[in-house]
Image (tube, rainbow, N blue to C red; front, side, top):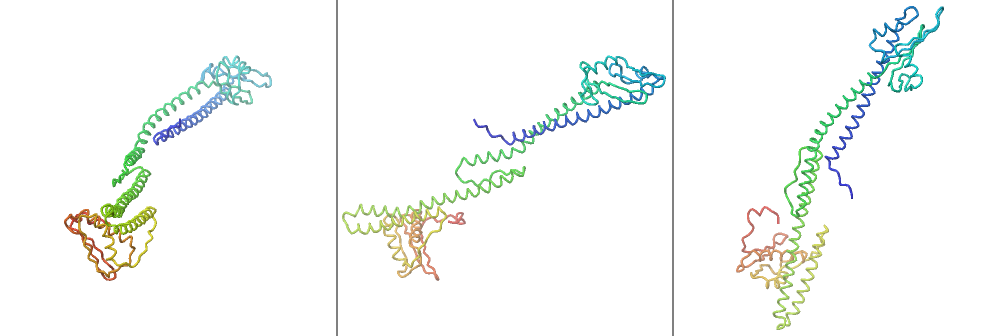
Length: 400
């Protein structure tokens, strides 16, 4: 099963958690490293101070370890000292140990592991800071137990972990709040788009445009521009379907009229048959050209027109003869017999029949429909008028 895609909120939360874990680990390691270096430096200083104190407590040729232990902050159970006194004139070489230092030195020599030049691990005893220094009088070996250093490191680690835990909880809560605030506009936009896709009707209501974040605002504006273009395209398609059905209805009405005429009078008047066949052939050819023109429009191609000089009166008479039988209104033609015009014949017939069809739909059945042709300068005006209610005033501002 394919994994479901993650939401922006989940991606932000995952990225924040990874960043938080990496930051916490780096902070912890850096803190431990710094604290370890500082504490080891303190151990070295303490060891050096001890050696210096031992050098100044010599009485004659013997180091006064009792005086050192009485003044030292460390006790005999945490610090061990071994001193090799050099031989001088009249005094042989000698060894001195602090309390329990002899046993510890033997144990360290046998089982101790030198982790670093300054760190020694002695089993069952723990970690020790080791210092080996020589002077003109003696060689000093000091083992300073690191229990107090480790305990301080533990306190630091616990403090860092506690701070990281508290900051992580607060950070996750704040991250969730900010992630919700950042992703909510995108969620609202997605819901609006989903709701809009459930309908095929054009809508003039734009999608909500949030003020923040900027990326979602720009996305919403781009969606609105795209929806506006799609709405216009949908409106054009609906208008095209309406226009196409209107244009196709007219020649089909003429064809149906001639078929009806043939059924009524074809048997009794054979002369009607030849005329009807000519008209049916003419109208079917015009219907074919009309369909091809509509297909051309859908492909955004230019129509190919064939303008020619035509006399309007014969064209109108021929056009109205079959059409008149399908209308209840009488069509009156006022056109000078010699008036001609340079025009594409199919386009002219298509426009006149569309106007007649519209006039027949809205004009009273007992009122005539008039077609008037008038020369005007170098042009010709053709008007189709009826006695219908006309276009409402509030609709005249639109283009038809």
